[in-house]
Image (cartoon, rainbow, N blue to C red; front, side):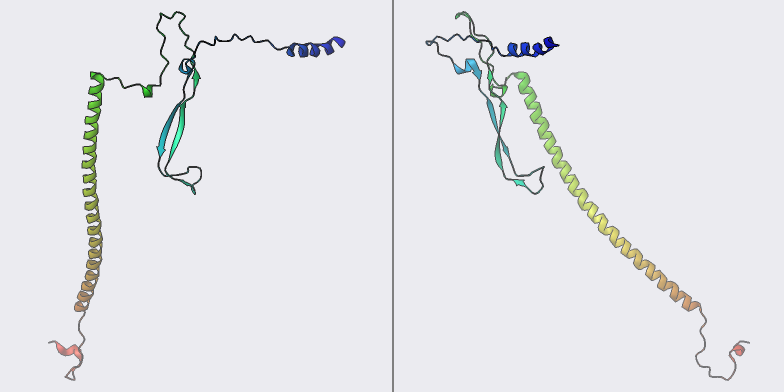
Length: 189
């Protein structure tokens, strides 16, 4: 039982020692180029127009610039050449800063994309014009439909009046004042 109490003390003594780190100083004559040791960070600026805050509909942001760190600084882990006669490796660069490779295939593809964009823009204009014509025709059809409904109502009212007039005409007229003293039944032979 007493041995079990001694086990935590053994672990505590093992944790109390720290390893010694030995550093070798760099000769003072050597100048260290900062790009050979660390790569710089890449910061891009994005221009944002007015927009409503998606988290709060009562807040609007005005046009401003947003800076974003695209790539943090990092250590250059490429080893330096041991021999000075060997060429040193250039530091890795961000692809955004390197020039675009230009060859016949890339130029042909860019020209094809430009041509396709022009064709799409022309088709969009044609489609917009057709849509405008369709809208005007739709408005004309709508007004014609309203006028036709009004005419139908007028025709139905006229038909009712005509039916009423025909019904009146078919009823026999009662003599208003008879000039003879004979009863109306004896008018005929």
